[in-house]
Amino acid sequence: MAKLKKTTRIEREKNRLLDVFGDLEENKLNTCLALIDRAAFITVSLEDLEDQLNVHGWVEPYKNGENQNGLKKSAAADAHISLTKNLNAIVKCLLELVPASKKESRLTAMMTR
Image (cartoon, rainbow, N blue to C red; front, side):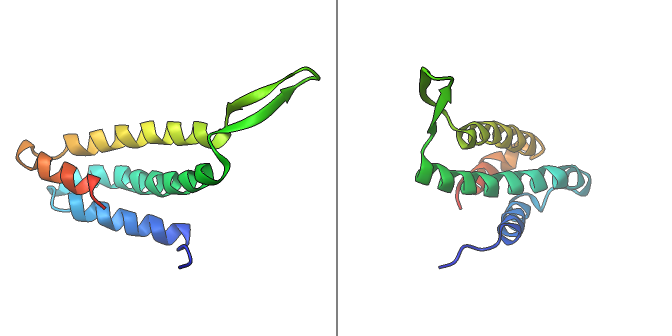
């Protein structure tokens, strides 16, 4: 099956997150919308990076001058690590806006796809 366009995948993830957080009170939901957009983009970007890392690996060769060479963490690995940290921070912010009585079910919904 062909992979969907990135914009389509982002929109689907955004809709999934809106299903999870959509019943927040209006002012909290308005605060969440930008975070939901970022979370959707980062989630899809992480999926793409994971595909790239599965093919090319987490390390890449480097050569500095004639005698210095070896392996280093790839740019995709650095991006993946950074985006994962950012996504975790966004999810934490989103969950802080949820009333305590609903937090557990929201967290479960976020983790299951």
